[in-house]
Length: 607
Image (cartoon, rainbow, N blue to C red; front, side, top):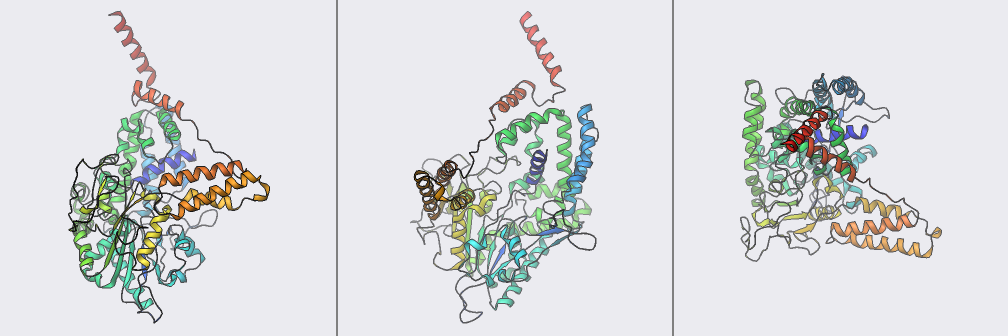
């Protein structure tokens, strides 16, 4: 039961980009001596992505609420009180199942959404009305206590990638992802001044991640002289022109509200579930008539969007500029929404000027880099999920500042010539080796790095991205995509979390208890894995091969049990049979449909 509840919640969290806008770890800046004769680094400010800041639920006195284990309760993306949710939904759900009608289920589900996400709702001035507090780190990483370090390292693996860099020059800017966007831009501007004062430097580096880039973009628009305070800006999968997920949600283009798609592929194509679980949910969902299920989902989405999301100017900042006018007309045209619309209109202008503002940085001597991930469809909550290249969360056009791409699974046309929109050097080839990306159309073709097949929400598990970002910020040895053969413009996406975990397990195996053959096989798999991990040019397929070899060696050594996935074939056949023969109808409707089909066959045979 808990498993399927988590799945249902996950679908809803997609609507607010909660899947993970990925956290990545980066460090201090280029050589400088303004805070002392021995200082070599500019201070660096990390501006994290959505949900990567500690925002706590509080009581009426402003004190953090804790759970049964004494841990503070997070307000992002919602305040999930499981007992309250079950109490709200259980009885109407049972009645609706028994009667095969909507006996308060849709209303109960909508109330559960409001109760959970209401902690992040805002008033008509776009300021949060819930009992929440954002934990601030108004000092460097070096001054953080153990609990603060643990919070940051949940998202940013500083310890592994910043060993040779001064932690007293690393700062972490926190914010409420459902907050007021104009206020957040002002807070970041003030935070820069604070860091400069604490370190004695006249400039800082910025590392905006995902949603964090929208705050930086707003700051550049509202405080146009900010370029004077910046040395380097390192964008990482930035949401500079929002995500089509939010654009489609705000414009009513939500895939799982199409019942045919919901029952025939939506869950499986999400890629967040294995096929066994996806097919099981498809089969189990028919316990309710499709009109009851759809009414419940539609009301839940309506309440999430209208009662929480459209009152958050930070959510509006994630709506692509091309989708904003129609969405604003739909939700912000009434007089009571005038204040919010004035604020979102202001950020809309920042979106339209974003590339000009970034070019202004470059023109004024600020070094600007970008990391882009591609060749992953946007999660299929959005109707446009497979119509443009993306990284699972954000479309490439937004993260790359305009690069031209073929769609996922396709290549650029035969004989395609790069557009050279922003590259005038005839000797530069900005077309990816897989013939999918034309980076010359992006704003910064010489300082933008691309990772093929990398998922946005798994960025923190790509060690090459971490090493690249560290090098780009830490020194001036890499100035563009041609500086180092270790880091060419186009690299492979990869996820090393499982392999690192396997290596840790392998290190703890007592070789003295193994036969010589098993010990040699384990050591060989370990060495192979270390070699692959140390090479930036190896691919996710190489990582997968190492995972298999190391897993096999550990299983053979008795250090692990062999894992087997449940066979989804039976459930697949059942789900497809039900859909092909009975469409999206629930089980209570199927007998009558079956009888009707039987009479139709008999009539056809007689005639």
